[in-house]
Image 1 (cartoon, rainbow, N blue to C red):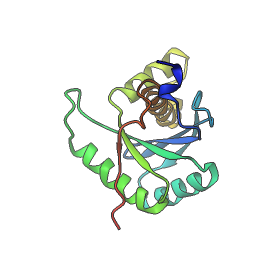
Image 2 (image 1 turned 90 degrees about the horizontal axis):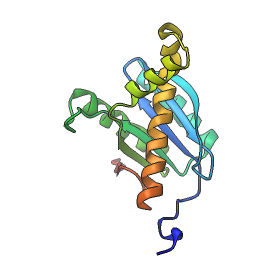
Image 3 (image 1 turned 135 degrees about the vertical axis):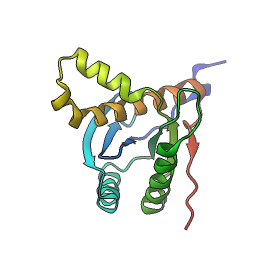
Amino acid sequence: MSGDDNAMRRGRRLAIDVGDARIGVASCDPDGILATPVETVPGRDVPAAQRRLKQLVDEYEPIEVVVGLPRSLKGSEGPAAVKVRGFTQQLAVLIAPIPVRLVDERMTTVTASQGLRASGVTSKKGRSVIDQAAAVIILQQALESERVSGKAPGEGVEVVI
């Protein structure tokens, strides 16, 4: 079995960490090697947030958008997951034909905040970057999943018009 069996799809991806107040956005290079923070989009005004995300998709021209799906530690989905699914459904319609995928994001915000604390970022200053850091972790996990499996990460979001 050669290493090419699990070839990564080439192309930039965007990752989104949807929170109540803020939405973290991250991107990667076309080879899917390095995930980097893009920006934090204010999340309270959902239509405005969706418009800004569409602008970022137009600007970055990703092959797909990966959205973190918040699950409980046991893997069940609560109100936060329902909200993210609804938000993602609207986004998928807005940015079609760019595919949108939901990936498990358990522990990403915790991991991001621990990493930021370890690097000396204060919690007050950290709030604006923590969502971006969580989006970076979501993207890194999605890229790693694809590298290992050779398949697109997570579950596809059907565009219902």
